[in-house]
Image 1 (cartoon, rainbow, N blue to C red):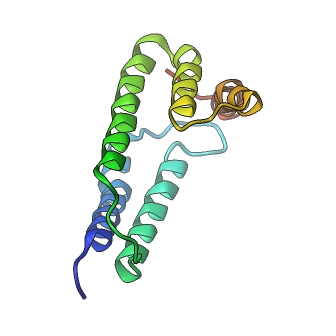
Image 2 (image 1 turned 30 degrees about the vertical axis):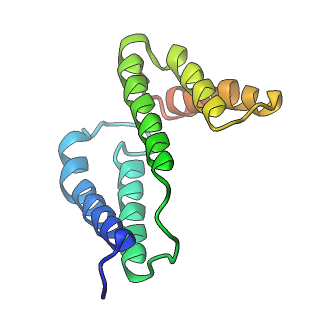
Length: 141
């Protein structure tokens, strides 16, 4: 089996998902009493999906060619933006920062239609806030 970028990234995600499931999530997610959804349910599901997708990528790599360097720069820009968003979320809170970050990301990917901008800036953060705070009875930063 020849190692290429897909298999290398698949191997990374396989081991990262397993590390999340077996070590990171049990260590850093505290158990609480009450509620009908355990705090580790969603993170564990994501870790399992990451591992399965990584294994699938190892077994069946794609046949596409390497992207241009500008695509990697753009991905780095998004990663940097998300890092700034995490810092701002901790400082100012989800309610104030999430709509701004959603707007910036939507504008960066080229979305200009008013309906979808409103859905992404108001609807999605509102839905996330409702599900986490009201339904799951958990606090957002």
